[in-house]
Length: 376
Ligand code: GMT
Image 1 (spheres, rainbow, N blue to C red):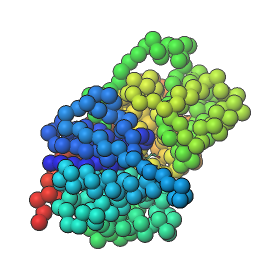
Image 2: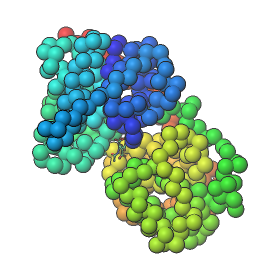
Image 3: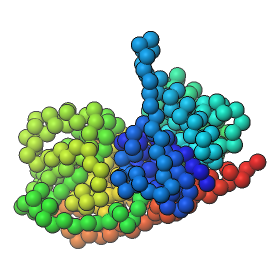
Image 4: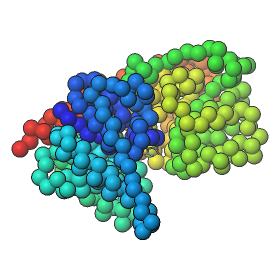
């Protein structure tokens, strides 16, 4: 098949999922066209030169008369151009806004082109943006005009159904992990440099938005560090980063918190950790939890959204209500102070990750596309 993929390619779990999906489909022999604003960050330079992969960057134009550059319109026009030129069978939009809506507009531009639009909901469009009544109607349009809509967790499906009562059922396709790439990659030398006295290593990775509850991450770490020597690795960047740095100084723990910024190759980093912290306010799935688990890292997190669909409480990690940092701190200590327990949780985490294999989920997307293409 000829498949177009449009996503936020430069950051975040949705871009990662869309890019990994595209790479896997290309390896299965499909022709994959990324229609994006920049090179997808998970593509890597090898992916860039992979057979069957084409990248179409959206160029925006700005004219003095326009107050802002019309990105969404440029994206729609680019989508229409790629659909027509390469005769796409499928256009897969990752996020309703703007991708599903732009895909619809693109198809309208081409009148009756056969291309089928698949939209995957990743979370923020439903859990945050759809709370705004104005945007809600645009999101509704994106959902209604798609030929199929998938969501990355049951929790997200339930929230979408509650808000939109869509006519067609939303299909659940959980996110996935490449178990060959994501496995525990021990690097004792590096570990010694980060934690020279055998300190425990806790890790948080996100785009540092308010929904990630960064102060909770720091509070959990503070509780752990009160009881045992520990280091916290903070990976990623975003709006709450500065405040996070300031908070660690205020708490007097700055020496034990390392801010590593944005990182592309995360499996070796995750493998350094004893625990992953994910105390989010909202989290439709929590791809980082799955990737950490594949590296044998148990998760301490909140019960928000789809996290409980990934992490089994008391088996591959521990979950508490959003904001209950005391409980999360206790849970973290219960694993860190009992290495034999940690070991059991670590192998359970890896085992759990095997329920979300790339092969299986990519096949689910592939069969969905095939079903749509065969529809009259
Ligand atoms: O977590 C973010 O803020 C980034 C966002 C994104 O657009 O990548 O992540 C969302 O999609 C991921 C991939 O499906 C999910 O694993 C994340 O849970 C989801 N984030 C939220 O729901 C907050």
